[in-house]
Length: 347
Image 1 (cartoon, rainbow, N blue to C red):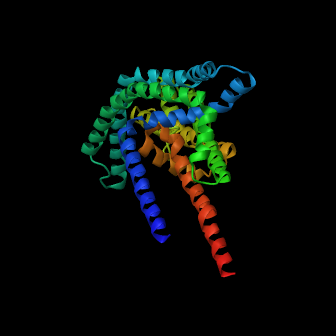
Image 2 (spheres, rainbow, N blue to C red):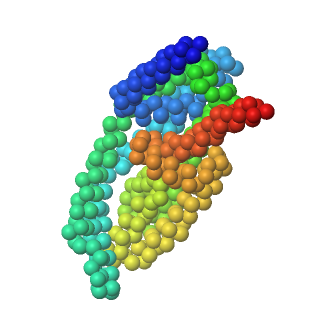
Image 3 (cartoon, helix red, strand yellow):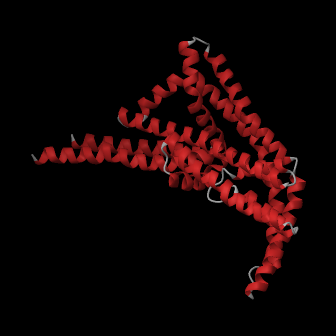
């Protein structure tokens, strides 16, 4: 009996090792499609209830319902984002020109502070290198947008099959995830909550900052205000620095051009109004939508951008939340059960 048990354990070990090996090979080969997969998962979570309503309540054909929802997402989400990116792309020369103005502003500010403090803060060579780096990175950042077209295509390709096989896919997940059903449901609820919180909350916060910033830009007469509106919206989705990437350079450019009152206004308005909108909404709206701790959002976005790219804004916080949830589930599935078995044996 013991030999049979040992043989089964050995077979199980090699079978698991084979599965892991194939999983690693597949992951490495398909890693470039990971953003498309994560994007499809995001849209699926946002759409699957509508899909069930159309196919099960309204009795629509699954293919037609899936195409309609995909078209709606394209119109409501991707087209506005595409127009925003196109607007920014058309202003590359303007951005590069103002990167030089920013470097001049930094030089003047550095000279002014050095004369007052009597110490050398930053050399002109370092500032010139920083300006050169910014100018060289702008076309690359905007060019990466065009490379995302293939990602969008594969995202919708995957999403279509996820939608038309929604019920079967969800049932299969329940069957193959080696956890009790209640813990699978907990994971499902956590994933849904985090995706909805970040997929809806983060763009809303960024757009609100952009609108508030645009009002200030129009008041003080910022050149190309809608360009800076786009920069503010995109920067507002970044962790820690946020929209300061937009209004701090603007303030420095004003100071460099001798427009001191505009520079002072931009500084006060940026930190006092635009920054306040970010703090209030990020720490209230996101928590209200998904009851997500602010630190989870901030550190999750930092990790997610590094691991997944732009889609990491959504799935970065999810990684941290899932890690904490899996620790709880492990304790519930194995640690508590082992304690119960030990207690029974002792009795």
